[in-house]
Figure 1 (cartoon, rainbow, N blue to C red):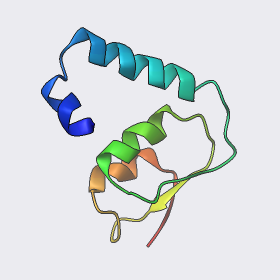
Figure 2: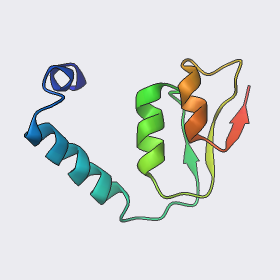
Figure 3: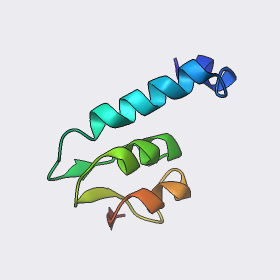
Length: 76
């Protein structure tokens, strides 16, 4: 679970898993990505995905504002 991982954030095994996940997710090019969570964690996953169109919530509707950094088309 992500809660358990937060406690182990600095362990080498956790970083290996994170880098492995990033490498696997970047193996595919996606035409479109929808972020329906609009939180920071989903934004980090968006950042890893190769897609020219990353759609998410706008400033007034995003649950966590840093998420706006990871989308390029936003709707309120």
